[in-house]
Image (cartoon, rainbow, N blue to C red):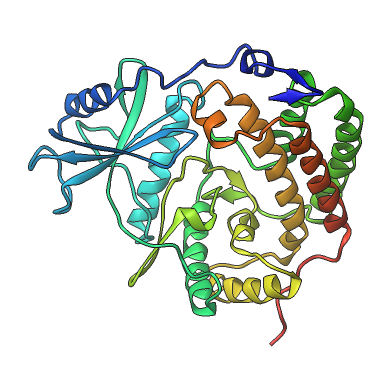
Length: 352
């Protein structure tokens, strides 16, 4: 990576208190040993699935050893060491169990030996049934309305009680804290530090104004990262996967990532999502003030997330451009655009 032509090593550019190569010992044999230690017998088939924060594998299993469908595969999710506590992971699992009990299409962890969270050496993991599906067609109004109905049901369960351990989608967690970490790191090129500081100050001021306009809204348990990649579509409708980022926050956090395109397109999409959503739950229109603010916070958080994970070999391989002067210039430009977007009138659903 180049900052003003100077090579900056990953060691120089990351938080020295971070966990180095947290999955370095998670070889295929270790994965299968961990799974067999809790019951299922592996047949040697193993495929790594797309995941950065954790490690997720499709595992072929022999008959017997676990109650499941006729599928001969399980999904094993190994949690990143040091990220969540056992209590926090268990809250995710318990939330999934509540959703399934409410007949909401989520994929819960399998209970083995009386628990869903397993330990093997330094690693913690959970096992899930493999569920098929395809990406939802978000340009189809009927698909959006149907997703909205299921999301309304999900949020009705989410509002029935509170998380005790899991973090919130808020200004401090997604904005102030990541920015403070980046400011103290060696990632920002010296010649761009002033521009970065100026644009982030403006951006965070816009975020705060948006949250002030939405003051008094209800905060509930959410999926937290409900982009199209975490919704699998089948003929029976959607089912939701990967609740690893489940948090407390405003309902709009689970809806805005379904919207794309220009303002007219997003208004149409929002109309269909809310049409379905409000079949099962009330939506407070004040939350619409938060769409661009939440987009801004996600961008800031995402930038710091990549930097914090740089010693994980998966990150340099996936984001080879990250940290270059051009990359930071693009990030500054993106935040400037968000500053403008937050000053525009809020997105509104179309009137009947």
